[in-house]
Length: 224
Image (cartoon, rainbow, N blue to C red; front, side):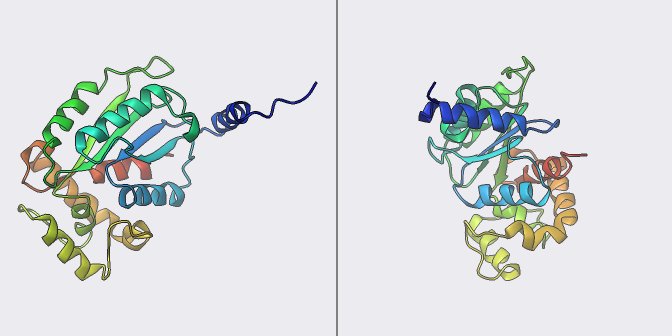
């Protein structure tokens, strides 16, 4: 009998191989607003800590970059999966939507939608799924700046970039190797981010805030 070598059959076999490579720790889906900066950063962490790609999926939003679109895409990708990305429906225990405050008009709606989904979705093991918005005020680069400076007061996005470039000359969005360059300061950045989280919430914009530190801590301790 001739072998079935159709694209659909090849994708099915790829999915089976990917499932076989999964580790015992939680399966995590990260969907980001940015198409390069955040995905590059989280994929660097995945590589540095040797996390299974089948357990930690990182993808930019394909619905758009508005915060509400990031959350909606994360929900859609979780519920429906994506055969081309080798993602099965509901194949995660945790889902994170990563976006910035910036000047987005849908920012607060996105926070509320993510909150409404937390614990309400069920995965392929019929478990309640953690669904969380990982917001940064004003931007993801605040997290990077916290590696070098202790920020406690509201700060504009352009000022964050200006000061960050004093420490990382030539930094641009989408740059690679950012985690590698900054990881020796990860401890102090996490402490500063946690201090902000203890004082403000994502809803308190324009007060400085970032949930990135918590997500990074999760990823770097996932195998423990």
